[in-house]
Image 1 (cartoon, one colour):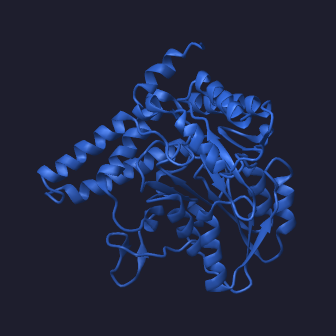
Image 2 (cartoon, rainbow, N blue to C red):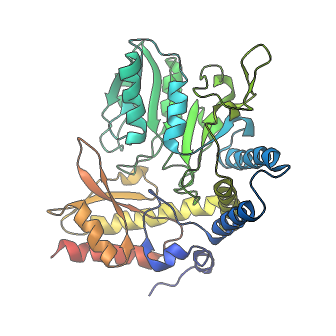
Image 3 (cartoon, helix red, strand yellow):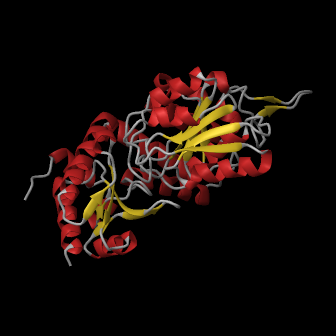
Length: 388
């Protein structure tokens, strides 16, 4: 038996979901810490017992949202004024993409590995405005990603839209190099950060990207229907708000948006969920430590990669030289859906990824909360299943 790091053991006690199963699916939904649920329940109870719109409540909502935006900005090295709260990564991506003044024949370059949360808004632009979508085949993401993207760019390319960590292969994209090449050719860079936010370090100002959308419910361990959109300050004029709502615009003669990215916020937010996300982010920052979490997730991911690569009949498709905590693989002769079901019966939660027209693969998401023993047990279980 492998001894559990005391810090890991202490933190796992705050994540009940990881005690009931070997939790390898933060790529879909991360485990929620007790502090987040406590914050959510307390806020929901107060709304019920005291009321949702008592004096000061509306003004307090704005302050609450700006606090959370500031936490997200701190995590990703941005200014709080560059952060808008959203309800999902897809909402953030759609907001950024639909805010651009497109013309027929404009081009967007993306990759063959993207999640539908990005590709579907791109297809809508093609149908609505006549935008041309050009796909760069980057394989599994371990080769010359920058070169493949550059090869698909032309003088009409206005945006490069891609993930910084691929949901379907686990590859971490060399985002700084992609951004530098896109900017050199006059194109904006809009990033799907659903898998990178909270899994790997992200320095938005350092990377230079123009927009970055992230989910709250995955690696940030918050509730569903939470997320954020970053828009670089000097791109605010290039990305117009698609939806206008109360208190975001000055209507005294002119339609003037509020300063900063708050202009992009769509609709109302469920206050208890925002407070739960705030509690999760503070806990991750102060109790867990993001640098420690990043390093541990990668270490466990490589341990899983190494183990699975030795199992007969298993093909690991994640590029080891460019990975974090996502490990994608296939077992010869077994649909990944069946493998995921069999592992769940053994107390291990993974998922499968179906990316048309590519193959369907099984995906393990190693989080910092996993133990070495859980990883080794998963590898052993896959080996046992593959041999029968």
